[in-house]
Amino acid sequence: MLTRMTTAPMSGRKAQAARNDELILTAARAVFTADPAAPISAVAERAGVGISALYRRYPSKEALLRKLCGDGLKLYIEVARRAVDDEGDPWEVFAAYLRGIVDADTSSLTIRLAGTFEPTEELFRDSALASELAVRAHRRAVEAGVLRPDVTPADLALVFEQLASIKLGDAARTAELRHRYLTLIMDGLRVPPSRSPLPGPPPGEGELERRWVPDGRGKG
Amino acid sequence: MLTRMTTAPMSGRKAQAARNDELILTAARAVFTADPAAPISAVAERAGVGISALYRRYPSKEALLRKLCGDGLKLYIEVARRAVDDEGDPWEVFAAYLRGIVDADTSSLTIRLAGTFEPTEELFRDSALASELAVRAHRRAVEAGVLRPDVTPADLALVFEQLASIKLGDAARTAELRHRYLTLIMDGLRVPPSRSPLPGPPPGEGELERRWVPDGRGKG
DNA sequence: AGCATACCGGAACGTAGAATTCCGTTCTGG
DNA sequence: CCAGAACGGAATTCTACGTTCCGGTATGCT
Image (cartoon, rainbow over all chains, first blue to last red; front, side, top):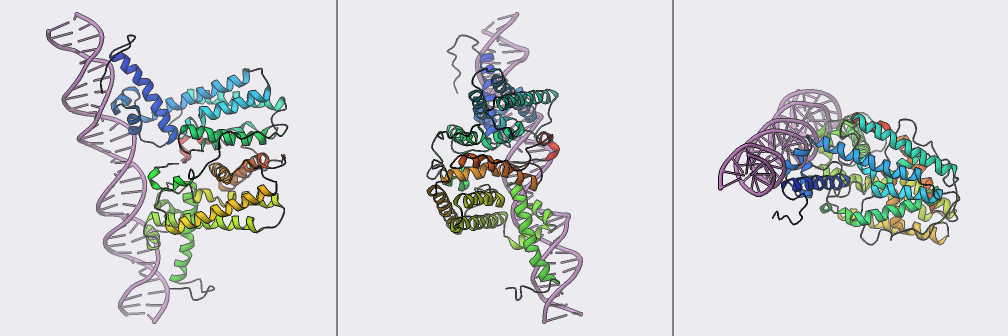
């Protein structure tokens, strides 16, 4: 691996380190999103760095997971706040909110990792804030009469988790399928009942069957 | 060695062994349904038997998993065949089919375990048969005009998997919640659009939050 | 130029957990 | 009363993972 600095700003060792910061976080997000029980070595490999590069930044695996979870929570908060603040068409705002959460895959970054580390005080606070915003977004949709009122914010949380459980093919295909089933569910959620065209093709020839071979290394 | 009498005396070594057969299978089903990566010792513990009782019946963990998967497939086939043969109201038959598969939790017993063992020829055959029946049940609903035609059999398979990903509280609560979201999705599936009352209460106070503590040992 | 050192790659270490085997014990059936 | 089926559970073996440690390397400062 050649280290040839072509960009003037922040070149040198410090720059490489700073870049690794991001590289490692991105890799960790991808790896643990795909498999919450993945080994830490998988993160290093994916990031293209050695293990010590990880341990220089985080004292333990738990610390890294906490960081990821915290980031995921903040991402959720950001998306939810957008929905709460947006004064546009109630259904469109709510639908964009649902799609935003599904795309951000915050379920995989938060609930899915929960229980694997000791939560911090800040985590609890952000979690409470996220809940609060979710309730507000929900209430807004219900009061505007675009969301069936027998669906609660907790219901929506579980819907997010169900969609996050979909893992098929690469990330792009997975996102596409999640949108497909989100649309299906939204047709069931909306007031008055609607019928949208489903986005993306359904699972096709062999796409499901492929998972049967052990080769796929497919985990939970 | 065949059982001479189905009503044979329940006492004696043979009877105890026969009872253990069932005990072990039931325990294995429960354990691996809850956690596909569970250790074999957990099955023995749950069944209230020693480990050697397991290995007397199955040469390896893989063999046990194959057995469970095969049983799950046969269960699916049974439920699907009922739907295909039933001449009653098309939507009611189809809805009962969906509920039946969800209750049988065949996704957890089949797809969820796939990839952890080398499939046998029979497994492939049953899998093909199950698919065939699913296609027939699907076609019947579409042709009767009660199922939106842009939803494919593969879509339904993924819907089953999503519902199977729900795990909250005990088995009864989990089943209740799965029905809740199945109903939500069915409202989106049905032609013409409908709006059913959602069965079971939504996730309530603390029901979701409880999963954050590591104590829960919550896997997958 | 020269050197201290931040940063890094990756082998080494210690450990926990899991599948499978092994052995002594119990109880049944003849 | 004995041969042995059936069993409980400890012992064994192996794997995989988190973490630590040991040199290397080149950068930034003097």
